Length: 485
Image (cartoon, rainbow, N blue to C red; front, side):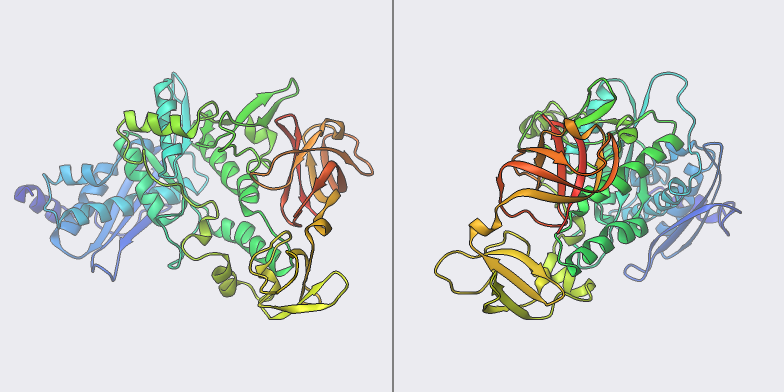
């Protein structure tokens, strides 16, 4: 550490003080380490017009806070988004191994303040005078990192964003794509690539729109699909809105899916890597949002993506997949529902379709249609869950043949094209499409329909109420609906 620089930052009190009027603040540190940093940023016309700080703790922490404020003040917001612990350490002339913790705290406080600005609706940057700016969703995994790399290689100016959706001490943050730990990892990766990085905190919206709906679904005896809901109404629309405030034309993500134009506008289509295709999970994304999206991995396999990451020396080239249901990482559905659900966990009867009692269950919310394991009953032939009955607190089981469905009732259908275009349906993620046709009163074209049904060319087994029905024309997603009871 440069003693003169440290002394200068400790003695310079120009930016020490209360937050400027209308500023955005972020804090890091606290009881665990005894050091605390708060950074406050006033943003005007895409620049940091003023930056102030407050700090408690060791000399290195106070100096790092002052250095972070000095680096940010006067910078364009997107340049401030490039500042990390390394830049703060360099401003101080180097830090000891112990002192680097101070630089990390100051950088985290700075980025939390930028996150508050990003989520405020304020315009943070004008469109570039030349070329294209693209916002890339980065989770800290290999797919989103390669998406960012490919966008930069094609000549776009890339800005990275990571969503913070869930923070819970029982969640394994290393396995979740939207935890505070994931945010820090994604920021470090973006900075290693030379990219500005912003965080968008959507946790309150995610909790009310996605998690509460997930819990309520199991309380009501359904098997909800929170990822479809999250992609369709929370994540992507919020990031597209941020792209507008950053002067970015498109949002690019690391999803495995394609966007195809059938002559009437954009539709989702299957990815080149069928084993990784995520078009089902993206089925509820509106066509207006699709017009703003790019999927750089659309024509690549997972193996090819990892090879690109390895050639670029990305540290995430071999990183394991994150968990889809991010808020369940490290805990599991049963334990999560035990903490959050108000009903559905009381013991009750397991009966067959005639009503004969076969055993007891520990709570109907732990069972889904088509489930075979975990029933805990002895029978001469395999038994499967046919349905759950929240009103009577029963789980009804039967032979596999009783699961067969040739007609599936749907609710809350959204058609992007006329019903006649529906030629197949996918009833679960990773399940094979089944030839089908859509029927129902008033299906007059694209739009929303409260009730309809899909007739299958062959029987489907284990059709679970609450799951998404992805409506297809070939591999084009022409609509979606929720499977009704």
